[in-house]
Length: 262
Image (tube, rainbow, N blue to C red; front, side, top):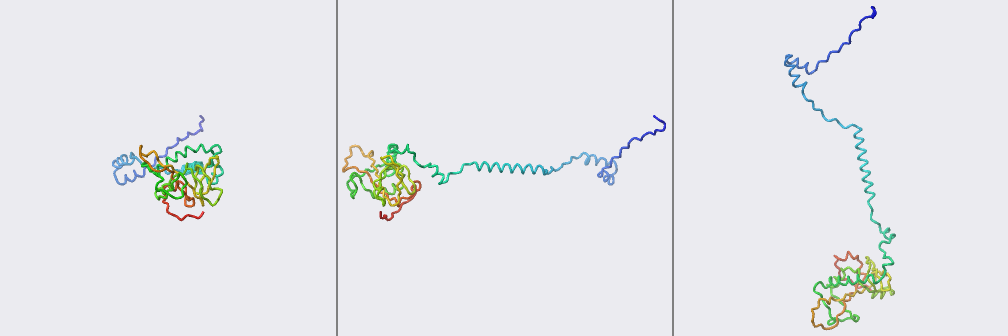
């Protein structure tokens, strides 16, 4: 170390600033009391801080999450299948009967099932057996023409899928005499399958249809003496007054209407 070198001074530590609360206490109290109050109530006191507000980054993140969830909800809603329109149903031909099902023998069991159903609707559990005595008119042999309002109202509200109908009168002469089992009924038409294994669509308007219902012979007491020949019930339905869907006729009350000139 050379003689002309001078010793360097040690860095000075700045004095700690006195607390502002302690300064105020010293002005109001003696030093010993002020130090005790500061140590107990200010220096060692817990400080409860309010939660910090979310930052802009957190707000942007939550906004993006909400937008993403909304987009996914819209995608799930758009993936739900929509019902087919009437034009699409006609294009897909979903209501058309395939050629392999256009055979009269296929629907004979359906017709037998319908006979049991309509007998239950018309006669109930009692089983009314109509006789030829007391019935007149221009009915064909083996039939009884019934004009009862109660039976007419019941047959009008019955489901005709499986019934065997016959066109007895129509403005179109080529339709008269068509007979077959109803395989589909719409508001305006009957679709029947004939014994020739053909599907015929017959409009209800300006046509009169005939339906035969055999009586419930099973409810006749054994050994009972009957007079006259048991005949089928024959109902004539005016298609112009019958233009309703099968599901809509169940709760509909039909009123007497004038007969259209056919």
